[in-house]
Amino acid sequence: MYQFKSGQFALKHVLFLLIFVLISTALPVSRTEINIPDIPEYTTLKCDLHMHTVFSDGNVWPTIRVAEAWRDGLDAISITDHIEYLPHTDDIPKNLNRPYEIALPHAEAMDLLFPMGAEITRERPTGHINAIFLNDINPLDTEVVNDAIKAAVDQGAFVFMNHPGWRQPNNIGIWYDEHTVLLENGWLHGVEVVNGSDYYPEAHQWCLDKKLTMMANSDVHNPIDYEYNQSTGKHRPVTLVFVKEKSLKGIKEALFGRRTAVFKENLLIGEKQFIEPIFYQSVKIKNPQITIKGTNSVNIQIHNDSDISYELVSDTTLTDIFYPSTITLQANKTVVLTVGGKIKDINATKEIALPYVAKNLLIEPAKGLPVKLKLHVNFIPASE
Image (cartoon, rainbow, N blue to C red; front, side):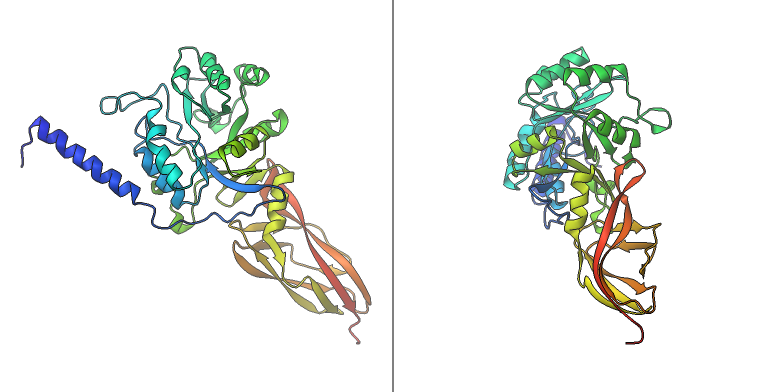
């Protein structure tokens, strides 16, 4: 075995770090876009606004977070290292703004929007709180938690509650009196409805009832591929932000305006006004005008131009036409829907809307989005 003196040992690790950083800057070889359409009046941005690096309890350098995000098709990220929990200080000195300073030029080079962020890490009842769009993290390093949150708000930050069910009984979030104080002060603007693999239906309902912004973030600590492998179709959760302009200003305005939705695996969560247009912007019926003779069947081709496979169910029957009670409009594919006549001798032209519920598009906890597939149908008698 080789024996290294302390100076040689340090040099070895400096060289290793330099090689690591060089590799990290070259990491983005190709980018996989997240295909979710824009909606009328707004551009849909894909954002992950909660993640960690070695400057708190993460295991990657800040530039890696930028490279991963670019490769994964994101438009914006925020590194939100813990303020109070810094387990690597023996190796990395405490410098709360440093992760942002390191990553910013790389984010700008990759055209990623990159607000400064931090995580205020306290015990229950307040719990963990993220603040983004900061100018300086240092004023948040205070003993009293509400002083830290106020310091963020004084900088114009957007503040949201993290993983409300974490370390709670049955992973169910609890809304404490302390959260009511934050809300009434105007110091709490959003909640993570999804954190990592966890969906919190109670947080979903809070956002609807208390007019808070719905958030979804990875909270990733390890390299992103340890938890989400894009090559297998598994993506990190993201906050969809509907902006008037693609800029930091545009994202901030949309977050405060509550124009977001949550995208987790094959689940889309949000208010009807936002996720309904995503569905209709995605789905196109290639042959909406059909002729049905008597009780014969006709195939309809439906293309889904999004990364979400829409799972449609119906418990309704129509008088003139039969159609399947379930159908999956597979992501980025064209599928066939078979419909047929119910009346042998009908002679009429009708506009018909097949009623479904998209069960993986949640407008409330356990409540899917009602959708309709509209057809122009020319019914002719079987005898003709």
